[in-house]
Image (tube, rainbow, N blue to C red; front, side):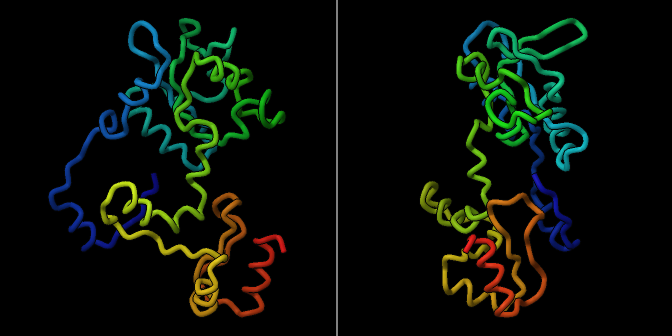
Amino acid sequence: MTLMPLPGNRRHELDQGTVTIGMGRFHGLESLQAVAPAGDGTPTVVVWTPGPLNAAYFEHAFLARQMGVELVEPSDLVVRDAVCYMRTTAGLQRVHTIYRRLDDDFIDPLEFRADSVLGVPGLVRAYREGTVAIANAIGTGVADDKAVYHYVPEMIRFYLSEEPILDNVPTYLLSDEKARRLMERKGIQLRDDWRAIGLNKIQGRPFKQTELEQKIEELLGV
């Protein structure tokens, strides 16, 4: 979720007929509960955040508050006998579904990055055993790849048979020769889609031909 300021006249247009929907319904708390392992009672859902130092922490806190579930940090979770629990003042409480808000590489130091201090040892094993569901399953981050932006309008048309309601951010692929020529003339953001947001980018000014060629070579690893 990214919030961007709009000019006053645009905000007025959006305000007309706007209906506010609680996140418990809109964001799909029921869906998170539905993917939980079968069991008795209401499944326990948590939002898993890296912590307050994360740039999107306010989003994580907002989602948890609106859905009425616990916001947990790595130290709040523990795996025992391939079952995930949340530490509480009353002892360990079983967790059925984790809404994950951190990258794959950091979720379990036993399976991915051994130096991760954000992960929960044994979580992937519990996931494999089917004792806990992880929403934003491992590997789904590929959908957030910046190169996917280019295809979003066509994806909407293909899968939904609808026209996009909002215009997509114009995104150009370096594999397209026409797009490369256009980038020579306009001040277009150039980003390596395999790197983190905010890194390795140029924006806001026209490119010199030599500079563009150099950056393309860097991004493609030529």
